[in-house]
Structure formats: structure tokens, C-alpha cells
Length: 634
Image (tube, rainbow, N blue to C red):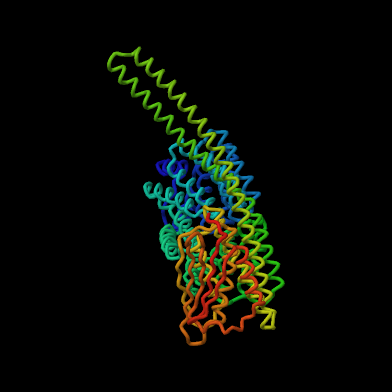
């Protein structure tokens, strides 16, 4: 009798026993052999589904369906809702999205019928994760925010942690890394306060993955190792596999390829044996990337092709990743036609994903949630003030005066609140209009950068088939010019200022790209004297092209083998002029440079556009100076 009562308490409140997995399986199977009530048996079957979820999805689905049959025979709505949730989660990770959504919706309907608000919030959260995996970020954000509001009203701290983590995921998918880290940190603080160890791996996984995206691989390695430690302590096969994938990506970024290959091979084996399609695809993408870097092009191609075959639901994130992986693998194998087609498909999928992201809509939804939260706090403060005034008045036997004062306070508060709402609405409309224009400009710059990148990639592919040295040089020069313009548009959509580019950052990035492109074997250092200027896009583009020509010329012709090269770049505003100077300590101009070469013609044409006076000085090297009079700062 005591044992049966203990079982009911455990399973009716959904407590999860923290024991080693093997002993937990044995314990649950022994329970099924006991003379339990049917409802308790249903919860034991559901618990088996939960435990199997972390090691074998097929077994998890089998026990979830058995649990559903038991609860349906009893017409126990709470148990039916729980069983539908377990079935949906198994289908979700098997990449069967239609079945997952149908079962999530059924679970939600039963929870609504019995008024289970905590369960409803959980179903909304599950649907949000599903929509996010499908690439419908607007629908996902709606589900997450509705769930988070409900959890706040219920005081559900663990649920609030989950909601904040999921909003962080959406922001990370949009490239808003700082916003994502803010939401992840909120979730982590809550879980640490609750001492909820079983939920920590998810947060640490997300933070580790975020640092990998930010190219901060040391921090990523730290959090991914924390994930692995907790996953092993919990004996969770799924978390162990996911931490292996993240660790592999960290080691890839740190160029420790042997360690990265070890971890990704382990992860692939875990997810393949568990029939976990979603995580298997992610692991294979990582495997393709690291095999490519290790020059195992055939293995990289095989991994990417397997993802393409498994991605039956056409997960948009995976589609972008495997097309890029295919393009790189084909290029490594010398199959340039296939590489080109895959590259075009990757950019097409990426543009489609950007369109689906609906950055502005999601930003508005998040802002609306924060605004409503502040309004509730304001109203709560007003209510507290009125209550305090009432208590003070009653203690001084001034009931009538108090009622009048309270009415006045309430009336003034309502008036102030209405005026505040009018002001907020007006400011919101203005902000929305500005945000729409800003989003459009960012999208334009992003697409221009993508198109220029495609052109650069095509030129790079074409150069592999050119045998004539002069023609090859011309194609490479064309590619560097395209890269100089693409870099400008990249900085425009990544910065807050959409009309201008920070000159110093742009010049330093451009020189690094060109230095890497022209690896002549000669040691060349760059020196910079650049004012803190933000230059308008119409001015920085011709300046960038001029710099490209002058720097390329110096890298190719100025220095002899064994010499120590120095290229100095100055850009300063003096006496209402922009003075651009590029000089080197090389062999100097020999006077044979053709004034009709394309590079010289291009520089002179661009200088004319900027109304610039051009000087070339050959003294202990070559120095080219432009005095620009037609320019605009942003």
C-alpha cells in the first residue's frame, strides 16, 4: 500500500528520479510487474518513454503510444495530454514535423479542456520550438511570448527560464548575438537559483554554440565542456552527443582538427544509433566542415549528401548549411559545375531564410512583450500607492477625505496613463517607420554583399581553369576589386550607421584581405595613420577601389625577395580636404608603368570623380598622394 501511494506521488507530479540510466530502466520495468492501478501503469509507461528519449527515440515512441492507450481506456484527460506530448516530442526529434505538430496540438487541446495552465504554457513552448526548427520564426516568437506571459502570471520560474532561452535562440538565428546572450543569461540565473541541474545542459549548449558563432572559440570550449560534464553526471546520451558536436565546432575553430574529428565521429554514432534525425543532420554538417578542412573532400561530400537525403522536411537552416558544404566539397574535388550549382542553391536558400526571419516583426513582438511587462509594473505601483494612501487615511480617521483623495489620485493616474499611452503610441509609430526603413536598407546592403560574394566566388572558380598568366592576373585583380566593394556593404548592414563606414576599420580589414590574397613570400608590414572618420558610402567606394589598386600594386611590384617591406597608409582630413597617401619603401617606380594600364586609368577616373589632385613621388620607394576635395562624411 505504501509503495503504491509513493508511486502515485512520484508520477502524478512528474518528478524525475536522478539515478543511473540502467538502474532506472530496471526499476521501471519491475514496477510494471507489480499489481498497480491502471492510471499508475500509464504514468510508468510515460516515464519509460521519457527515459528512453535520451537514448533511443523508437523505444520512446513505442512506450508513449502504450501510455496513450492506457489513459484513453480510462478516459483520463490529464494522462492523455501527457502521452500526446511524449509522442509529439519523439516525432519532433525524428524530424517528422507534421506528426509532431498534430500531437502537440492534441496535447494542448486536452490541457485547455481541464484548465491546466502550466501544461498549456508547456505546449505553447513546444510548438514554438517546432516552428523555429521549421524556419517560421514569427510563429515561433508568438508561441514563446504567449507561453512566457502565462508562466510569469503563474510564477513558474523554471518555465520562465525555458521561455527566455527560446527567445535567445530566435535572436541568435537572426544574428543578434548580444540580444541572444542577454536572454540566455537570464535563463541561466534562474536555473542556478533553482539549482535545476537537469535543465542546465540546454542553456550551456546554447551559450557554447553562441560563442562558436561569435568566433570566440575559447569561451565556446569552456561552456561546451561544462555541458559535457553535467551530461555525463546525468547520464544523458542525447546531451552528451550534442556537447560532442559543439566541442567539435570549437576545436575546428581552434584548428585542433584531430580532437574535432574524434568528437564529431562519436556524436554521429550516438545519433545514428538513436534514430535522432534532427541531431544526426547537425552532426553530419559539422562532420562535413571538419573533413573539408582536413582535406578529406570525399568524406566531406558524403556527409553533406546524407544530410540532403535525411532532410525530408526541408529544415531551412540545414538546407543552407548542406548546400554550402556541398559547394565546398565539390570544389575540393575539382567538380566545379556541381560546386557552382550548390553555391547558387545555398545563396537562394539563405535569401529565402532571411525573408522568413521577419526580423522587424519579431523585434516588434519582443518589444511589445517588454512594453506590456513595464505597463503591468506601472499599474501595480499605482495600485500600491493608492492602497498605501487608504491605509494612512484610515489610521487617522479621515475616511471621507481619503476616498476623495484616492479618487483624485486614481483620476490623475488614469489621465497621466492615457497621456503616456498616446505618447508611447506616437513614438512607436515613428520608431516603426524608422525601423522599416532601416530594415529595408540593411536588407539591400545584405543582398548587394551576397551578390558581390557570388561574383567573387565565380571569379575564383573561373581562375582555376585559366592558364594564361596575364589573363589570370586580370581575373584576380577583378576579384579583389569586387571584394573591396563587398566589404563596404558588409560593414553597412552590420553597423548601426547605414549610410557610412568607419574608415580605419575598413582600411585595416581591406589590407588584411589583400595581403592574404597576394601571398608573394615577402614579409610586408602595414602602418596606419587614419583619422577617426565615418565616410559616406558614395565617397568610401571610390576610395576603397583606389586603395585596392595602390596596395595590390605595392604587394606585386614594390619589393624584392628577401627584403623587409613596409606599406604606409594615411587618411586624414586637413584644410577641408581628405588627404589619402599610400607609400612603400620598395624599389620605386622605374618610369615604365603604362599610363594606359587599367589600374592607372581606374585610379585617374575615380580621382576625377572625387575632384582629387593626384601626385606620384618616387623617392626611397613610391608614394601616391590624393588631395580629395569632393567628399562627404556620414
